[in-house]
Image (cartoon, rainbow, N blue to C red; front, side, top):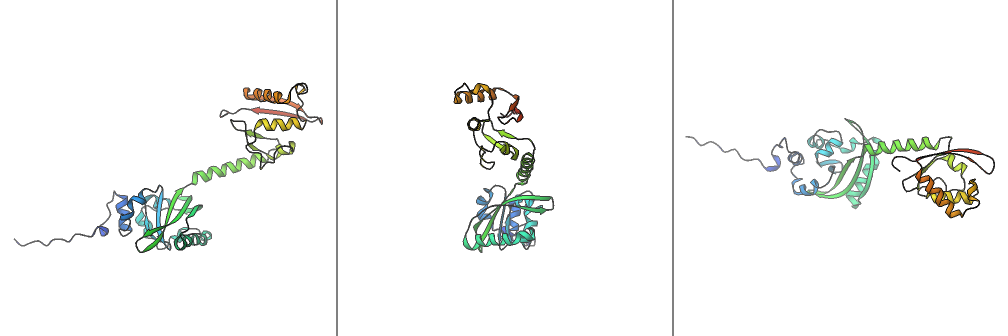
Length: 265
């Protein structure tokens, strides 16, 4: 029987990737160079991308998907990763990458918008120098912070709306410290800390300053120890879920005060 020729085995780094193994696919796409660094790269949470002069060398599945690609192989087929960024941001990306690659500067996290095939994403990007076959490269970590950015945007809109209210507004936390005020509040109480400095001020200090500036018209204050009166005032406020009161100022003005304790305290 004639001897059948033996098919030579393929080197490990040229074997086709195993379909159900992301790491095998990534190693194959990156020319097999990721294998020695697998433990380090796998320990990094989120998306991981390595490039040199924006030529991709390695990407994990998370990075590929965050950047709008289906697989790492598809991402690594790109010739210039800089093209993924908006033109207005490309100069800054180049500058950051050069500082990492040539000066070894670890870049702090940077949050940027990125238009991908699945829509607009906000990504937090950190960059550092990484030893890679052929010379130093840039290790990029990616985190999707779209939800956080949207939440912050919503909070900003809410703060702006509160600031424009014609009525005065103040919000305390569960420890009775100031969280938020609006412009009208500071017009009425100019003797209190400025709007950009009042956050964290205790309610006791707010009441104490009001007493010192003679804007408290409660007749019981006149014949009471001021500190004891303040203590009792705060105790009453803490015990009431809802408080409505009409106050007359020394100059004759009247205010309707509504205080409501939220479910969170």
